[in-house]
Amino acid sequence: MLKKEIQDGIVIAQLSDKKTNAITLETLKQIKEIVTEVNAKDDLKGIILTGEGRFFSSGFSLPMFMEFETPEEVISFFTEQEEILMGFFTCKKPVVCAINGHCAAMGMILAMASDYRIVKNHPKIKLGMSEIKIGLGLSIAQSGIMRFGLDSDKRFRDVMYFGDMVDVTRAREMEIVDEVVEEENLIPRAKQIISLWIDTPNRPFIQIKQSLKAVAAGQINRLLKEENWQDTMARTLLSKDVKATLAFVQASMEPKK
Image 1 (cartoon, rainbow, N blue to C red):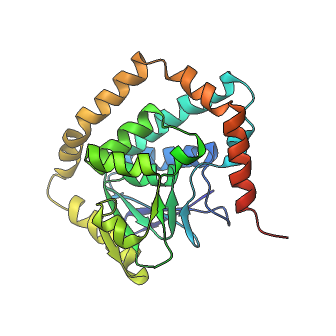
Image 2 (cartoon, rainbow, N blue to C red):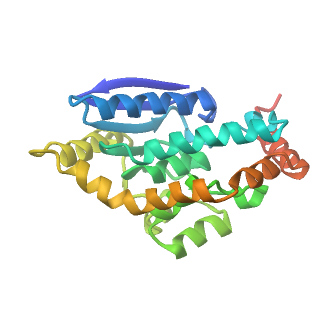
């Protein structure tokens, strides 16, 4: 699910499922473990999140969603997902997303939760959020993190309402990503950014990042306590129309026999 190695004091976490790097609850739990470790150990500088193969990540595992049968299952999953996603968003150390391939849905949300986004220069790579086209909305944490990462109500509108998948040039123009680099420079550049930010006396980056994200994190946590998000998520994921659409999308992703 998630391969991990440490290079130059930086944890490189690589999404890996040999297909589209779909994200499961187990993947999220592994991300949580890495965040906890990086926060606790002074010798670790930060995290690079990347993918294996042609995909960074296609998003959540659709079969996992299709297996939900009760509201309790949906609510249990998203309760844990929201907590882990917020932990990743507020990791004390620098988090850089090195986007090696196609990036969509939860893959894009994890990218937006990072502090910096670098994408490999390749004409076939597509990035975006197509949820609106398959009947899915966003959870509270997902929505808040996308808004923060896009840093503009207009960009949030354009990415979410149209649901388009864009190439790396357009993604840079829309400020979805910060840099476009050649493949051989993807991980080295991500490591360079992390070292640049954290290798300073007293590591003021940690306090600055906390201050930068405090308002967004506080608002997300408040809404999680005050809003009745559970019924909305359960109703959406258990909808027959949504399940049918997810099944269609999943079938289209399977290799032809």
